[in-house]
Image 1 (cartoon, helix red, strand yellow):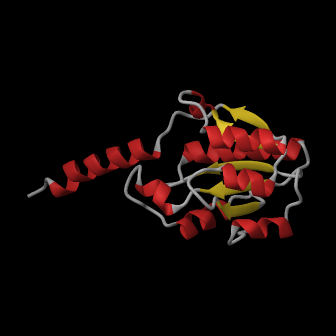
Image 2 (cartoon, one colour):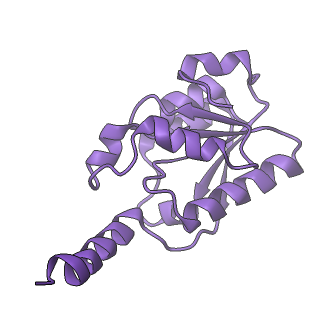
Image 3 (spheres, helix red, strand yellow):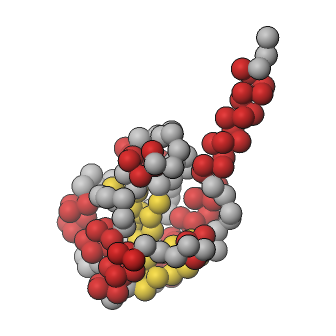
Amino acid sequence: MIIRALPGVREFVQPRIAVLASGAFDPLHYGHIRYVRAAAEQARAENLPLVVAVAPDDYVKRRHPLVQPLEGRMEMLDALRWVDFVVPQGSESLARAIREIRPVYVVKGTDWKVHGLPKDEVEAVEEVGATISWVDVSPVSSSELLHAAFWRFADEWVGRT
């Protein structure tokens, strides 16, 4: 189910009764699928719903050209059978969503361990008493996939005479 605004999540998800996963998901790829499935497995093991927060378009645009707008990315995630609720993240930081949803677990991919989580997100996790759950994810990058596709397209199609 897509919840159109972050504050609306309280109608459907009670505090301390959810698992939260998040990402930009642009474009959605197999690494994302593995991450969401791992988050869902944890949610099911705890008999909790899985809420997926989706980053805003501005966040994506700072990393690479936008492939799918927020609404489209939310719709694709909602179609995954493991996802109970999809919400817009509300800002570039996940901190606001953590405070609003108040999950038991915040699931993050191990790729975040390289540079560490943003300080405000760590503070929000501590504030609501959540636990960060690390899941091993495939080292797949949306930006790298787009870059490779662009150059493949340029070589195969644009370079033709």
